[in-house]
Length: 203
Length: 303
Image 1: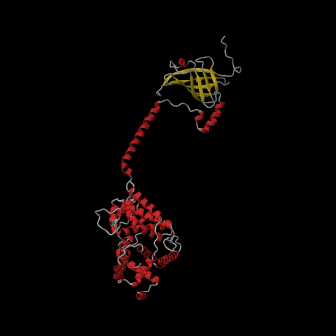
Image 2 (image 1 turned 135 degrees about the vertical axis):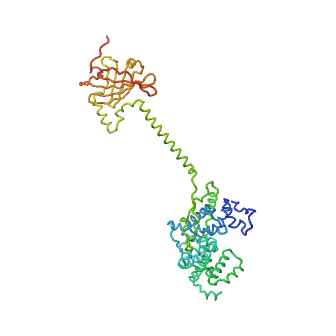
Image 3 (image 1 turned 180 degrees about the horizontal axis):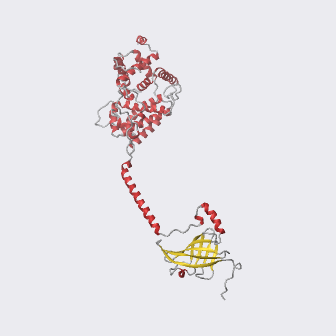
């Protein structure tokens, strides 16, 4: 699929990404260009999969959900009116697909201590063990300290979505997301034992 | 429920900092934004980001899914919009933001019409015309059948199964069962046979003389059924040379000793196109039971 690396149309405005911005690719995909959607797929596959993998208990469930998400996105791409917020639109689908998987009873709750595929061949065993422990700590923190709405917000933030994109994904206003994010960070800080004054002192 | 409040400056600063983080802003910009945020908040964000282990999809899965998407996108029926739940298009709740709920509960796009659905009126009209034509044909067919010859009596083997067994046994006890021959050659040297299963066969060596000049074959087949302890009725058909039939319906009465029978009846001609015409009645015929040689009356020697 070498054509996936082809240049953007000459008429497209210059953008930072050589393949084009999200808005440009969404506009092309809405006109039925499959190459544009393929580029969006490559751009967001890792993030969507990672989001599903952290919210679903198994690799198979995450792959099933990822496939469903992109097929749904492909079918509904014409309804994505604001290409600049494509990430939020895509993760709105992702969030609902994951919720539907739980609602349908196909999956059970994630066991944060029993993730089988944390190993990465590129890391040493020690580093893998350390990162696994960090992941478990974050998982416990996420489960013990945060409300469901906070977890939604944190998971999307950890997929590098901006506050505007999160607002689209959660179908909430931009201001509400900013407020909720601030509260979520404060809960996170309290659970981590990061005292405000102590942090000031260390910094 | 936590009341909504307008974002403060600190909310904005925190969001701006985190937005700069996710878009890989230059360090100097990050440093400038970080000065506006609580250091403990920055520490919490960095801890969460550092502890987040990224999972990567299996390359085989990624390639297969990409191929599936491209096949779907480029197939002639690749438009999945009709089956995909769409983002909610209804206005926001006047009571403030709320959880959008599962996407399957949102308003879905109207499925596209099936291609044949637009032909529904033509289909209904066509079906109505067919029903009218079928009704007319049925009426015509019923009126035609009234002019056609009635079917022959059903043989015992074709009657109701429950009656057939008893009828077959009753036929075997009926004195009509057997083979009969004309006793005196008047009106014909005929032979008739009546089987217990309702089959009847007759031979008329000179059918033309007995059918008012209409030529037919000498052998006939038909059916019979008892009408009393010693009476019966039979219907046989002689194939006519014109392709039709000569049908004889004869009522029989067996003598008390069971060795002779007298028959009289009617006959009609069935043309090749199915029409029938009444013919002069068959003269009474007297027949005797055919027996094995030496068991009955001897035939008169020719010499």
